[in-house]
Structure formats: structure tokens, C-alpha cells
Length: 188
Image (cartoon, rainbow, N blue to C red; front, top):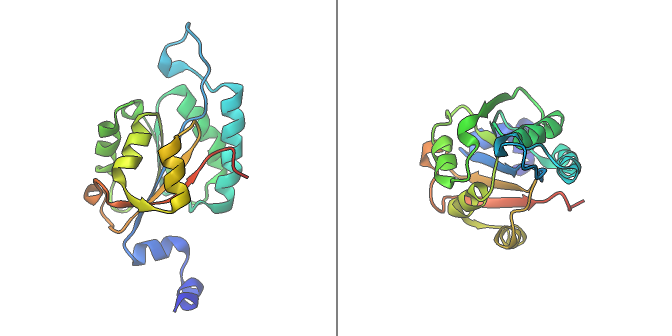
């Protein structure tokens, strides 16, 4: 049966057949510290640019392309997006949102609940501690390696991949997701 499905369907089609949502939380790369700039205007540091480029290479290898990207309006988040966007496939709607320039996980979760059902795979680029707390809130279980990494640290440019057994974004909530993968720029 699996070979039959693999032959007939792409990964994105399988997600729709089995009514699953996939969510990628990407923390922006390391930002410069500059007292002369407002926090929202801080660009990526050299380390942040290198890490974003490394994540772009990883994304090319294994990420199912999102059909919606939601990105914080902060300069460092937009620069992280610019680094990875060439690695993503397909027709992608990109929204840069001031609302996602937040450190509050309830804002992130509220935004997720507003996503139209037609977007089965979403990438959200944002900030800590909002992304780490939201990931832990949504995660019921996951691979042991991914769970260990999440519970250790959510470093700059880390990517959490969650899967939900529903086709409705408003239906996701506490402990409804599975942490499929947790990746950092340090991995090869």
C-alpha cells in the first residue's frame, strides 16, 4: 500500500489525504547588538548570516515546501527569511507581519488559529521565548532526539517541525502536535 501511495502521491498530497497540518517554527538568526538601533531594526550578526545560510542548505534537503510563510517584521527575521527563501519550493505566499514581532507565545498561537485551511504547511519565522514556549505547548510527543533538543535549548536559527492530525488550524492547541524534527545550524 505504501509503495502504491508513494507512486501516486507527492508528500503534500499525502498530507491532504490524511488530514494533517505541518508547522515549521524557525527562530531568526543571531542578531547584532547595537545600542543605537531600535530592537526591531537590529540586523543579523555575521554568525546569524552564516547560520541562516547553513539552515538554507538543510532545508533544501528535507523540508516539504510551505504554502504560507509568516515572518516577523523585525529586520533580523526578514534577513533570515531572505537567506532561506531560495531553498523553498513551490508557490508560496509570504506575509511579513508586525504582529509577529513578539516574545509572547499567545500572540503566535492566536495567529496560527487564523490561518486558512487551504494552507496545510506553514513556516513561521519569529522570536524567542515565544517560539520555544509555543512549541512546548503544542507538542504532545515526538522523536526522542527532537524532544531532547527542544528541552535543552531553542538556539538562534533552530527549526522545530510539528505535525498535527487535523486539517483545521483553529483545532490545534495544547499537546495536539508531534515534534517530528528539531534541527539547528550546527547539524550537517
